[in-house]
Amino acid sequence: MATVTSFPSRKITINGSKKLYFGGTAYLGLQTHPKFLKIHIKNIKKYGTNYGASRKSNIKIDVFDKAEKHLVKLVKSEACATVSSGFLASQLACNFFKANGHSVYYAPNAHISLHHYNSKNSSSYSELNVTLEKHLKKTDKPPIVFLDSLDFNGCNYPNFEALQQLPLDKIILIADDSHAIGLPLNNGAGCFSSLKEFHPKELIICTSLGKGFAVQGGALFGTKKRIEQLKNTAFYGGASPASPANLATLIEAEVIYKKRQQRLAKHIAAFLIKTNHLEHFSYTPNHAAFSFSNQKITKHLEDNNIVVTNFNYPNEDSATMSRIVLSAHHKKKDIELVCNLINTLHK
Image (cartoon, rainbow, N blue to C red; front, side, top):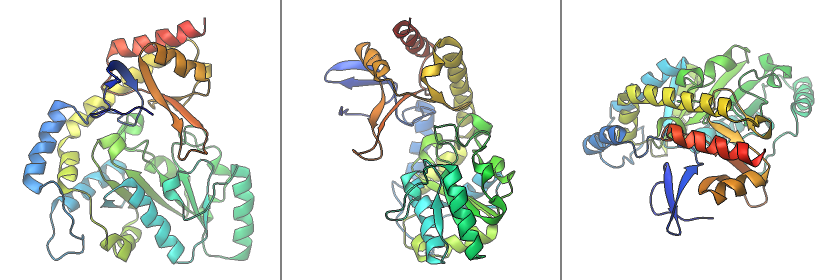
């Protein structure tokens, strides 16, 4: 594990040595972008560095409603609730349905943020399907299925082929969309509309706002009735909300987001064209992360001063997660360098 003293942007310094960084989740590379920071700093001056009052308080800041309407328009859902993090968004949904007596099940590779205590992912969608069929024979109460819309293993986005074998019309589907919303795929709208096409009994989206929009916060999307129910819980009312300055920035930076999405899309296309050995990678169409298991790639890139994502996730007992992550803050020459190094390794 390497320690750095500033935000790990395009370049990082480790032990006095400068390296290119192709890891993390700063997909649009906005965390240190001058124009984006100018907007954010202006909003911090207006709304302060933090707002710890409940959304149920008798004093309300109008930017919360404005941001939720803005996100509803983008995602094309009926309603939205913003919260302080993507993890909180997932746990709000999980705790709500558990408290209301629903049985919860987890698709393969579902993110840990969706989990309730010691729950486990199904080993396969076939196994999950059998489990759901048994559940539905015993009760009419719809089960909850949690999944990652984009799971980096090709099971879900863009075609969701494995998901379609489930009895979707009888289940409430809750998807973590953190690695899709705000990114080039679906023009920043994430996967709500794509999942809606499969006609689940009900669809709820949970997401972080940090990966795509570069601001700390989270959000849930669904029907007006369900979002109001979630907002009326003590779990929601007792938590601090997302920073108003962050939400104001999300609204005002729309033009910057679009430009950076286009820039990232060009980087992804260049990587796909210039890399001769894509068979070594697992990747999703229009997404910036390229996962791999061959640690020779990691070593070869490190020897040439390029650092990628490479650690055990989500805990020390988990398998090593290795990814080359492209960002809009990279330059054309950075993409070409990585591609050439990969091609040289596999000659």
